[in-house]
Image 1: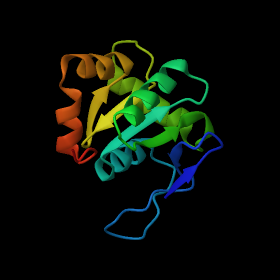
Image 2: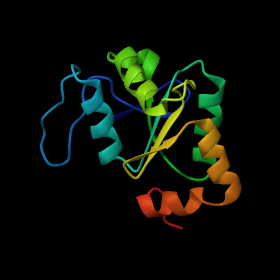
Image 3: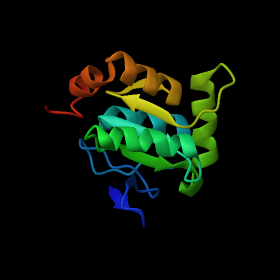
Length: 135
């Protein structure tokens, strides 16, 4: 389920995650499963913090390209700190774990990787392959 906040940006609901295969709602007790489920069922997922300026840059880039990512604001999510710990393990080099971008079910990286892919021309093909862009 997606909701819209006061800025008009679509965000995933923090109540639970419904899969297409079944109408079961995932419990918030396993942050790894939450991340994996979100990444595997959405073309683009952006884990963000509402006050993070680099997260805003990532959102604006994706929206500017015509992508409607699923956005998870970790500071508004019930399992936010636990999800952030999972993302920190994915980053593994001591960098800030947000923004964290998943494209086509795979962890792309943070803002540096997102911008590098955009600049070198590999981001659009990745987004098309994931089904986030049609043109």
